[in-house]
Length: 496
Image 1: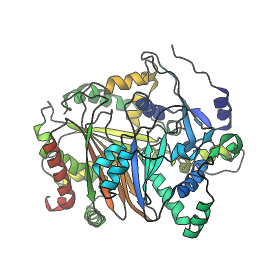
Image 2: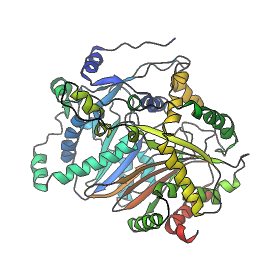
Image 3: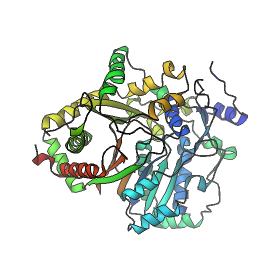
Image 4: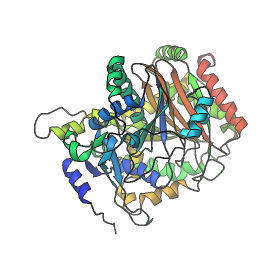
């Protein structure tokens, strides 16, 4: 029997105005991870040419949240404690009062000391590890994201993933760069002098008429349901291939620690790689190249010792589900508010995730055939909408109407052997005055032993953060694998 939810007057009123709604199934998946203490945060660190003060951040955030009300939402949490009882998805709603300190926070002194002690090195692996440990609560009073200044030119975006994704972090950096570029130094100085950081950023009672409707959940705009032809493959992979593939030697736990490394592809080397790839007969993405080289490095230092029956490993690749949303034409009729909420621009921020999960043999001899194969495979997945299907099955009524999703995820993730790699690439961040960007997360309680978080900028190339669950392999092998991976990125064309 499904439990019921009682809407409080504030939530009911906001729903009628389009400023509250029930979580979508994909949003609820990440909310479930947070409720079960199975995910902490991801972060995007960005350095700008322009100086950024708290007063400028106040002006930036004040304008941004009104334009994108999903950034003002909190969750109306319900009881999910009964494991065998399906529970309704929580609601999200615009918060009544938003103060500057609800969004822009002071980082713990230990993090700031570490940052300044490393010479303000935003790529410091120890810093990234500490930032991913910052807690962003789930519940009525707390927004699901934060900003923080590391110094006068460097800002961190942190999110607990419930209502945002890596692309949201990328878009936050771009939005901030646009704000800085359109505000001259004189304007900034004049505006900043009039800012009172104690003044609320937003008050619903007096400003609700300024808001557009919340954007619909991604699964109400895109059909995640797989075709019947996909089900035999999914079942076979889950019940057979998964059991016989390479596993983490230790059981997963909520207290699992991670070891971080960062590899950079310089902007000069990135230009060289693009020229090399463009000379091939088919268009090859940087992402496919990175994936192939990572698999090669894994084999040389870890997976050649793979004792699984099939000698297979696996890679999970999150994908942006926004690509599958059809752009809706603007309208000036009575439904204009809904049309605006449905446009792709208003999906700029939000949890709009899909993903593919592939089992594969390790690569013991790097060739162009391997690179083109990986590229064709993943491009085919994207074109055929394969990234939608795993989430479609996991969040389907077949699963969630039998027991709590919280319990399903706990049983699947806690006390089990982890698998291979989670590789998340948010792409190139393009914007005025962006000097460098780093995207960082770890595997937490998902199925992977290693997490690659990738982002690029035109000025500083591509940063790849590698976070390994302790115990997946020895520190010596991990260091050797990362070093070999870096070498492949710098001269792979000479080894083929």
